[in-house]
Image (cartoon, rainbow, N blue to C red):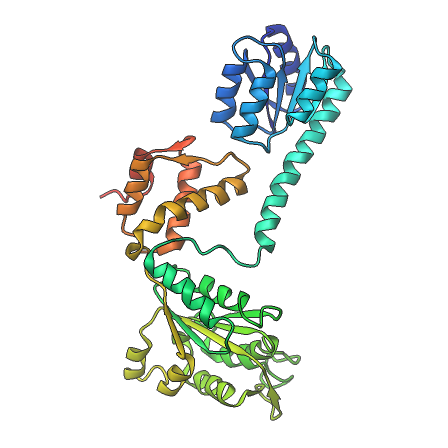
Length: 387
């Protein structure tokens, strides 16, 4: 149900509009002057605002200025019984969605409201789509460790050197891989991702190298593997420490010779792939335990990039929180919430076992459960585990 805020100092007008729009299925909030209307506007998210122009305390045009500063995406329709063409033009110039004279024509009012609702939906959809089509998220943080990673990416990305990215779960290893591809000479090609931990060991070879029709029971047609898909681009092997030894041997051969053979086939296929790998494991220890090939480790680790845990870069938390607040509030179609300094300090002191991924989840939880300003008590009540 769409929420509409009606701001008018005439009680009869508020009542009449409220009854009509409630009958049409809208949820109505009312305010008797501009100041009360601005307070409600800042406290709650509305789909459309109907606002009178001539009001005590804060007139409609002043409300319009302040409301658009708080959230420029919510359509505001100005209504007035004392308006002139000049007033209407001024209101539209200031950003009003439309201007309607009193008494409003019911059909025009309902059509204008529907158009305003459509605009709200389009604005929200556009923001979501922009985030989806954006190639790479920004790498947030100014800590020395993050700056070193950025500098390394700038130097390494334009080369063909293979890169091994290490770090705990949730620290942003995939983001580093995406930036390496984006800044490389292969950016015009595909970045193909394979999560080695998510694929059963008996299927990993088919996933990486493809298979021929009939090569095993469920192989009802030929399949192109990830190495071929990534030819001319970058292949990102995430969680490579979980790859089976037999698949490791074939990956090693592909890296050495630039050729692969599909499962069940005997034809060698040339591939032009830059491999970037990532792991949360200590691969040298895995080598000692005979779970990982030393020769493959050396092939992959021409350049080593270690992504620090969030606990090792706590000074970046305010920037990360600010960015997450911006993105999450936009996704929910609400004005960006603020967070006060004590709340930020509480987040900086928290033990982030899930790193960046956990922080984003926590910020989303705070956006949902907190008021317009997130305070320390919100963090204590909704983030810190109860003992």
